[in-house]
Structure formats: structure tokens, C-alpha cells
Length: 480
Image (tube, rainbow, N blue to C red):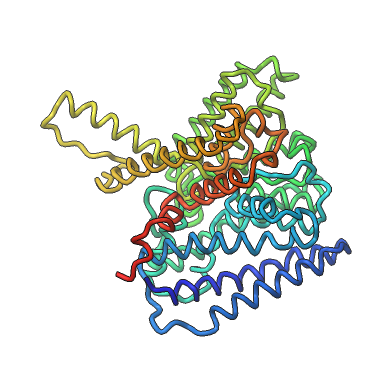
């Protein structure tokens, strides 16, 4: 284990976080609020710690997969710890566990909150909550790859640890250039959405925070009713962009660099993703028709909520906990499916669902024709057997973590729907669940133990399980 490299990278990460915190500091100055000093103290502390532990570059700079996974897991935890400090210092969230929960939820783009009145927060705190979504959406280590000089192997170890999906590929030969392209696309889509919301008449502060929450598929809103009080047009725009940010970013790369829309739509995962959305909207429109004022209202709210849940954004325009059982069942299923691999969304990922379905189909055919040799194909190419096996192992680990989390949270004796959907909402980085954690409720009532379990689930879900699991494996910390 190359401890010096881990400490050095964590120091650089804290320096980056200190620089990012200058943005909410400026917001506090613009609105002339009392948050200036808490953010200034946090920036100074974060920057000082980061500089102290990264002052000396390690003699052995190279590291391997084990160090890469540990760096990413510890990096997200450390960032969340320091990101929680301003909330405690300015009194918006005086309890550290609650502040830590809120910040982990922000960086992991979960959007589960312990707050019952977000409108009482200062503008700086609201901005920082939303900004954590945007940072965590594409991944801070992906950003580091774009700006820091590193060896190619090291880049891949970090990229594998943070990027969502069964496979991590490169858009171009150099992984550093891939990271730059991803952030350029991410930034361009963010700016485009922000401009469109401004054109529709949305307030500038609202537009930037809603855009951050949408782009990172996070779901922190700055209004107590989430997105419900915005205009119908603005809700539709947010719905469209939630769906777009749930796309595999390879889709946008193809469009940007010469591929036609028709060619880009040949991506099997994108087609299945859009088909699931369309089918879910139709089912909910029909099943919950009595809950809506008109057919257009039914379409708008169904589309918004389906887009919000499958992309794991977590915004809401209606209390879907009051919808019929079938509609709520569809939403819970979407929680687990999630968005596309290579997107800012969470969940199990559409690509894994496709691979599991095809692997299941292959096994059935094998029973009928034992001698037949057939590979699992996706996008016209055969997948490696290790990729298919990896998806199966991932599913097993996912189920184990989920079951253990539900059992621990269940010790508090809340109803089963609350416990089940609370774990589903955090592990899949969605935000709201059902019953006591529905869209009009929050997670404040959970005990500190349950909150830390749910925080682990948020981090595990965002980092694709393994980085967080490896922190608890004794072999991870052995010298050889």
C-alpha cells in the first residue's frame, strides 16, 4: 500500500475543495449575509490541511488499483467532512452528524435531506448544497484527471473507481483527454440549461441552483415544495434535461464529433432507457389519472416524476406517495433501474439490466441446447465473459448491502415501506422514498446509527460499491 501517494492525492483534493468553496463565499458577499466568516474559516482550514499533507511529493508516485479505490473512497469521505463544516459554523445545521449527512447526500448526488425548511437557509448555504451536486455529478477525481499530470495507469485506476457502469472506456486514446472532454460536455449542457431557464423568466439564483441539481441528478431544491411552484414550461424543461443528463455521455460525444443523431441512437442502452421512460409515463398517466386535473397535467407530472426517479435526481412536482399502488410500484422499480452507465445518474444502471437479461436468456437457451456456444452481445459486439460475470457479482454485493442496511435501519421499528425505500433512495442516490421518507418528508427522524448506515449506502451507491467495501477488507491495508 502506497500510503504517501494516497495522502498526497487527498491533500490535492482538499486544495481543490478549498478553491471551490470560494464560490459560496462570493455568494455570501453578494447577498451581504453572515456566512462570510464561516466559509472563510472552512476555506482556510481545508486549504491548510490540504497543503500540509501534500507539501512533499511522494518519492514513489506510482500506485495501483488498490490505492486508487482507497483514494476515491477516502477522498469522498474527507470532502464531505470538510464540506459539512460551514453548515455547523453558520448555524444552519448545528448538529455535525446532520450536516455530514446533508453534505454526503450532496456530493453523492442523492438529495436525501434532514431539513424541513430549506427556505430558511442562507443563500450561501443553499448555493453550496446545490454546488455539491454539480461537483459530484461527473466526479471530482475525473476533474482531477483533467487538470493534474498523472501517469496513464494511475488515471485508469482512479477513473475505474469513480465512473458508473459495468465497463470504463476511453473516448480518445489518452484518458486525461477523455476526462477533459467529459467535463466540457458536462459544462456545456449545464450552461445551456441555465440559459434556457433564464429565458423562461426564472430568477438567476433559482436557475443556477436548479441547474446544478439537475445536471448532477442530485435533487436538492431551494424551495420547500421542491419544483412544484415553478411554471409548467420550466418543469417540462427540467424534465427534458434530467433525461438528457441520464444519458451515457458517449451519446453526446458522438453527436459533438461528427456522428448523426440516428447513429448515436443506435446505442442499445439509450434506446432501452427511453423505452422504459415512455412505458412508465403511460402506465402512471392511466393508473393515476384521477390524481390529475387534466390530461396535460397527467402527462407533465408523470413525465417529470418518471424522469426524476429513473435519473435518480429526486426533484418532485407532486406528492407521489398519494398515487395509486401500481404507480408507486413503477416508481420503486425505476429507483433500482437507474440511469445509463457513464451518466451523472445513479441506480443499478440500464446497461447492467440489459446484460443480466441477456445472460438470463443465454442460460435458458443453454438448457435447451447444451452444446451451443453463444456470447452476450451489446451494441453489436460480444461482451467479455468477465464483464458479464462482473455484473452478476455486482448484483450479489448490491443485494447483500441492501439487505444488511434494511435490517440495521429496521431496528428502529419504523414501518417496512419507510425502511425499504429509505435504503433504496440512498443506495441508488435518489433522495425521496415513500411513507415517512416521501417527497414531503425528510430523514431527520432517523437515529445517528441509521444515518451513518444510510450515508455509507449513499457513498457505496455513488462509487459503485467496491471502493467503500475495500475500506473494510483487511487485505486492503496489508503491505503486500
